Image (spheres, rainbow, N blue to C red):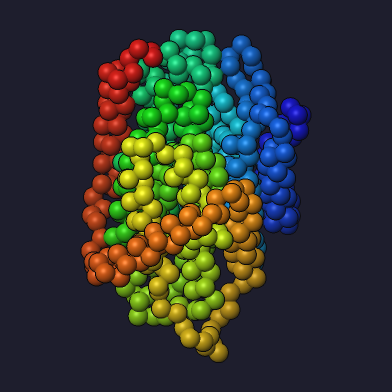
Length: 486
């Protein structure tokens, strides 16, 4: 098992660097890396119990292989595969595919890490690879967006490293379990960094501009899998340490509400999807026990949505309302919108039902409201006007695009097999009622709202300020509410 895991982790890294020597194989080798992850995830699902791989026993450096990691790894494999298919007929260089493989491998390593120092290394590599993909077009705009992302990420990880050292100083171990008994400042530093990397609550204000200004395939990677590398450790900690579980659930609820409110009033399609990503990450944290399945369904649908929106004639909803979109694009856009809204027969339905069943009583009212808000957000996409027929001069989409969309949407149908028990009459009727309520709210009120929220909180100096304030808040929580744990 150890050898298999190490080979699975290192082979894509090796292929990523090999692409510089064999650029003619950039597509096929990248494809192989994605298939390896899908196969490994399916192998993990077949294991009867979790497996812990100890790498350095004296320092608590270890890996955990279980179904939670399998869900995230499967998401990584499918999204990466879809992006490679999408870019197949493009002129992307070996450098682009190399960074995809390095990013892919680093994210996989983050999903099986169960110690603070391994996670630190993987998150830093992820930041660099993501930065290089964001800035791939080399325009002034994306260079600034990429530098902004990299600086925010590096500042957060500097705080994280200090927190990890404090944990080691306390227990002489980097294991996640070392947070129990560590000083409150260590807990605050590590959590602030992970919340920033995951785009959670007010620390996620860097996310909309970064995701919306990137190229469509990079946006799909960022929203589909990259931010989940920061969310995954929080889910793992919520399941591992029961004392921390309520805090993570609280941040999940707050994030779900904040993101969906901004998404409802956004007037730009890609920014709407980016704010929706913030909200959906909150759903993952609000119900950690089913966070893996929710991450899978969200990663698939959000990647599909970013790829589809990248083919629309405009990013502005006001322009799209006056310019009907091609019917094939409109159809797949509707299917993706139905899934994330929770319509039965698509995996988003099962994810939302299982999430609601795992909520604590104090979470239920707010999260039900966030689900209604999600249906309002995607009503904006579902009800975009479509052409009644395809014009003769309309340029057809490439086979790579349709292969990627078919893979992602088809996987949303197949993923229903994980939780078939949610298909009860009560759950189906409730889901339909929620969608109907969201659509009524959209047509009755939201559709007439012309103004988006201010982007002032997204400015670079405010991002730094938000990190400082969150650090103070987390330290106060650890000191005053959970002092006995430390």
